[in-house]
Amino acid sequence: MAEVTAALVKELREKTGAGMMDCKRALGDTGGDIEAAVDWLRKKGLAAAASKAGRVAAEGLIGVATRGPVGAVVEVNSETDFVARNSEFQTFVRGVSALALDGDGEIGSLKETAYPGTGRTVEAELTDLIATIGENLVLRRLLRLSAGQGGVFSYVHNALGPGIGKIGVIVALSSTLSADELAVLGKQLAMHIAAASPLYLDTASVPKSALDRERDVLRAQALATGRSEEIIDKMVDGRLRNFARFALGEGIDRHRPDFAAEVAAQLKN
Image (cartoon, rainbow, N blue to C red; front, side):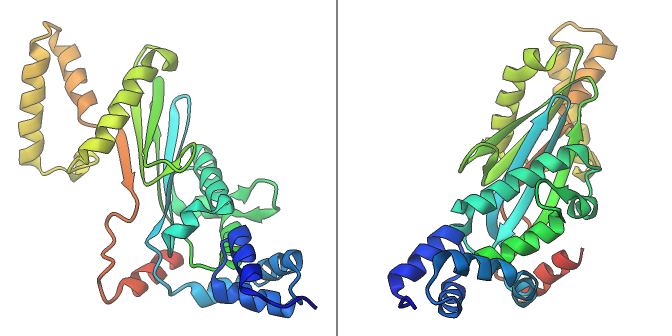
C-alpha cells in the first residue's frame, strides 16, 4: 500500500481538479493508487453532488458557440477560479454551448439533452463532474439567437481557450449578405459590445424614454446616409437589438447572506 503523501494528493488534484480533502480520502480508500482514486471520485457522483449543492458557486466560465445563422452563450459556475483551468470542466462548457445551438433556448431542455459519448444527460454529466472535481457546479443560464438570413458572430474576452472565457458575446446580423461577408463586421461588433458593457441587452429591458432618445439619435445618424425611410427604419431597429452579452457572475450578489439559498434555487430550476 502506497503512503498517501502530499505529492500524491497534489498529483490527484491536478489530474482531476477535485478538492484536497476529497483527494486525500480517495487515495486513502484506494491504497494510494492514482487511477483507482480517480475512479473512486467518479463513483461518488450522486452523494458528492448532493453534499455540495448548497455551496456558493460564482466563478467558472462563459461558453459561446456559433454555426451559421445560430449562436448560443452559456454560463457554468464553479466555487473557485481554479476549476476554470480544469480541462474536463472546459470540455463540458464547450460541449453544452455547442448542444445549445440545436435547443430551444431553455435551461431545462438543455439539462435533459443527451451529452455526447456518455449515455448520460447534460444534467447527469454535470453531476458526474461534480464528483470528479469536488466542487459545486451550476449550469446557470443560456441564451440562443437566430439570425434567419445572415449570421451569428461571437467574441470571448479573457479567453482560456477556444469559445470559453470570462465574458462572452454573440451578435445576430440579419442580412442578404452571406455569413462570410458579414464575419468581419460581426466580430468587430461583438468585441465592441464586450468592451462597452451596455446598460441594456435587449429592447424589452430599456425604459421607453431611453429607447425613444436612442432611436432619435440613431435616426438622425441614418438620415445622413441619404437612404429611404424604409431602409432607415430597418437600420435603426437593427442597431437596437440582436445581441447577447454574458459576464461571469453578473447579477449575483456574492456578499448577500442568502446567496447559498439563491444557488440552491438555481439548482432546483
